[in-house]
Length: 246
Image (tube, rainbow, N blue to C red):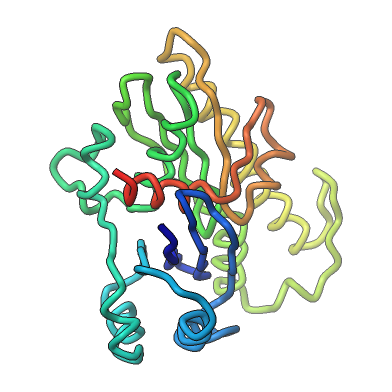
């Protein structure tokens, strides 16, 4: 079976071609860089595929505006995977409001659970940083959401009356201009705090968990983490493939 998968993220969208449950190719773009409508139309012209499997964390009105612009032959092939669809693979921590757990988090956990039978942690470093714990019985114990460095920097940029990005970055704890103070602080807040979270989560387990990291900012996590990490670039798409093959 060959199908396309789309991850509608807050900042970017990603399109992947999946064949026989394996990720064959990936395309990533900002919404204002390349039209997702043009991308899908182009791919439909040059490749045969059975369906388009999607997951989304953006507002439904935005998704509907995209779908309304698509030709009917493409639109009819689209299927959205919801968090509720993931519950047959995992026991999710969000019992009362499962729809409020981002489907991307659930899909990441499904894919990771197929890779090992131990307790595990998944860190997804995207627009925000999510950290979720899944035990060996596939029970999701819960997680933490951190603001990414980019989010923290953006908040300060909106708060201040001047553009601190005009200043030079000094990589030192004794920062001597506003940009360096903010960027060094946001880096520590976003990345170094992950070590604390991993230690706290792991202290609740008898065995130290396997830790997977994914997302566009994964390298920053790897460089700042004190623990051994397994980087899986296409973890979410692997999760979608798992759901589809069931």
